[in-house]
Length: 176
Image 1 (cartoon, helix red, strand yellow):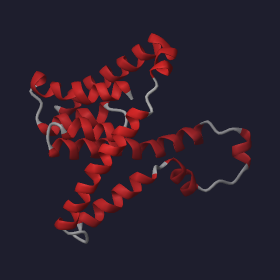
Image 2 (cartoon, one colour; image 1 turned 90 degrees about the horizontal axis):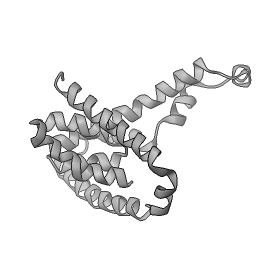
Image 3 (cartoon, helix red, strand yellow; image 1 turned 180 degrees about the vertical axis):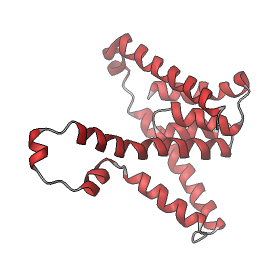
Image 4 (cartoon, one colour; image 1 turned 120 degrees about the vertical axis):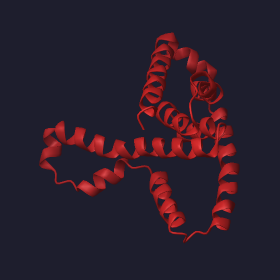
């Protein structure tokens, strides 16, 4: 949570430092920030386009986890799993977070104008308020003692992964 909060503050500084367009920054934020709420926070600071792109990139990453986990599960099945008859759809749904289904459903309803612009703006206002509440809740769960307990090796590893993802995001955003 602390590293995510740090990203929310520092990541937007990449825009002037690297001359990133809003679209490019959305890709960087969507690829490099861990939690969906933090992606929205880090990207909406720059622009609504950045927030839209970052959210789409992040949710695409989340959605792609389900097939990846399923493929890995098939490749590395245990003997017990080979004997049992499991349903492919239930395996995929087991790894697909409920908010992704909600995102896809609402995106379809808004794109087809079943949800009109006025209602869409009302929903967005409510979402902003709920987002602030979720960030407060994340902050309330941070326990400094637990962070100190994991030690510097874990923190350094996480920071290196974040740096790698930022570099990957900046590099790939130039090709899209």
